[in-house]
Amino acid sequence: MTQSVQEDSLLLDAKLIATLGAGPPLIRDKPPPEPSRIKPTQSYRSVFMSDMHLGTRASRADLILDFLENHNAETVYLVGDIVDNWHPLSSNWKPEHHQVLQRFFDLPRAGTRVVYVPGNHDDFFRNYAGTSFGGIEIKMDVVHQAADGRRYLVTHGDICDVFSLRAPLLARIGSLIERIAMAVDVAQRHVWRQFGQPEWCWIERVINRTNAVIRKYDRFEERLAHLAQSGGYDGIICGHFHQPALHNDFGTTYANCGDWSGSNTAIVEDFGGGLDLVRVYEPPACEPITATDYEKEGVLPLAV
Image (cartoon, rainbow, N blue to C red; front, side, top):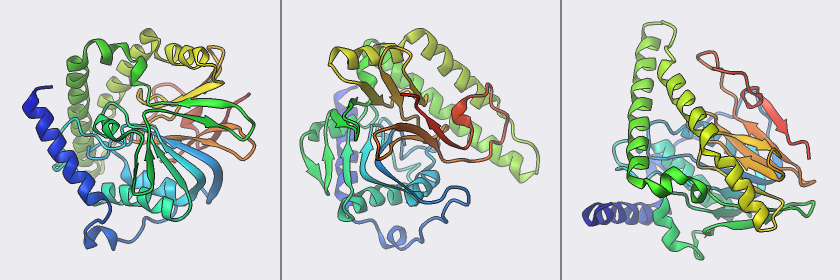
């Protein structure tokens, strides 16, 4: 990143920080979203959410608000890439995006602990690690102790992304290409809906297949699981790769929160210490490429 781009990004993010505490009346007075017609209000000991990418067209702020309306927790962990500052925010920033941020600032006032672990798309906020902003604790990473005594390392996950570490410029270009593709996908779906025609899903399928191939050969999950093991933890809770998961395939618990631009998932901890993978259900416009457990509405328990 050049010096001028860095300065522009810092200026943009500084303005964003200055306005987070109090949104304009138009946003603050907007009525909250309707409660989910499917999921009742549920309470958890902890909730882990990541990769919201607020400020991009793909971000499903409406589903995030729906999830927060119907799921309460004593502690909420924001596991990185909450705001996407890799590209200018203004063109894609919506009132719903500000509502999500305002909701997070409201949680500490209601007695909920909120811990923010910035990711690579919101790495500007890593400059504030170790501080608290509006009642939200900002940390590079954090160790979460579950109700059953198990200890989990909570980190965004880009620390184990070889592609991002060795070729950061290519990673940014890839992110830009994916955002453009997602924008085209959103536009073409809107057009087909206007004409009452079935939506095409080929762009989404190409993105999903590409991510699946990268995930298979990058060994991202395995490296993160080994990172947890080397630190003496019982597992790791992360985000970054937009692939929700919850398993013990590598000898320790690997939990990926997923994202809020496709899978719309979160990791939750019940009051007994068990982890589950939950999703805000939305009827798919197309058939999924492959059937997976998290595509089903409801809760996917972890068998540990």
